[in-house]
Image: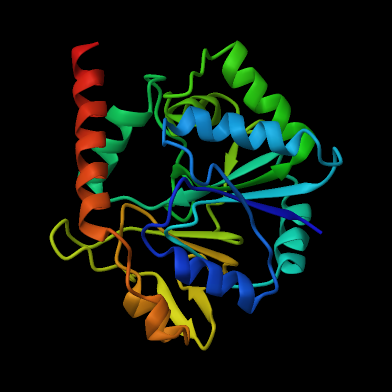
Length: 265
């Protein structure tokens, strides 16, 4: 059985909803970092590596954010799909509009090469969800530390995007949304989810652009999840995000700092 790892230092966002979705599909996530001070995404990757290096080498590992993710299937379905896809390290994929494409490339794509285009236009790597085998993931994270100089405060998304753009045999994205479906909000004010490619079918989603039925939903960027969760049959008590405005403000300032840092380098 696959191991699900969620890194989080305290309760925030839609954590209760995440846990309810795990219970629905009999998933017992391993929570790392709880009670610790948040340092950065590099620290998160290193903590995951330190945990999974004790797992069997061929064990499937699924990494998810516990504050904006809902499981839509059991682990058997996810494992089966991953084994059929023959990818070594598979990240979720984003479909972005022109403005967000420019922001993404400026903040995360330091290769000065174009991001590969896919048939579905889900072209952009997102590290909020990924799946791999324990041995390969450990070696990849070690490589990020040794050869890409990843520190505790490094942006994992920038480093993995750099590998993906150069060599998809090492890091690839789920551009068909077979396992992971990433959504963003329609606007920065209401943060209503953009459901353009989504059709609801009781407790599952159908991606009308790719024809897939994803297993994991990731609402990136502090997108509001209440409307989605209600359509999926979750209790209203699990749909109140913790520290929502504070977390969104922190995330905005974080990305502004990242963009300024890139602009000044």
